[in-house]
Length: 121
Ligand SMILES: [Zn+2]
Image (cartoon, rainbow, N blue to C red; front, side):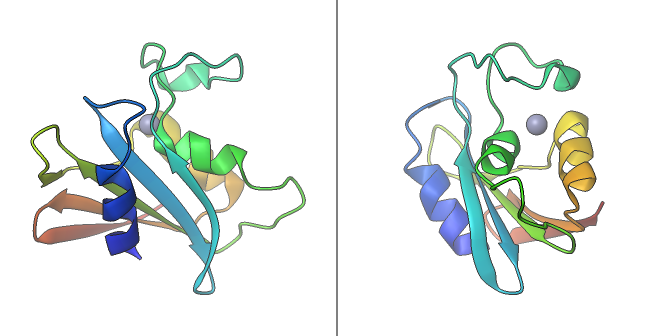
């Protein structure tokens, strides 16, 4: 699944300097996908304190229907640098909190071209 996230991040042109993608899965099926974007959003999560961008994790969470149970879900987060290299995509504290509160139990994120890290929330 992380490969799909990497591919989507590479194609994300909403925020060229910070191309990230989050795919949320549960039981092997895709529940939601989100991309980082630069535009300001009235629903922006102020808690993460990062200027006016929308993080891909938050974008993905917003697309989940309210009655969908995310308990036990996994978030796959990938980042592709401006130069096209896979780079570190560790979720910030605000996103970790938002994912955890939504019920997501683990995050798999890219660290470099050949390293995928796993984190328990
Ligand atoms: Zn974040």
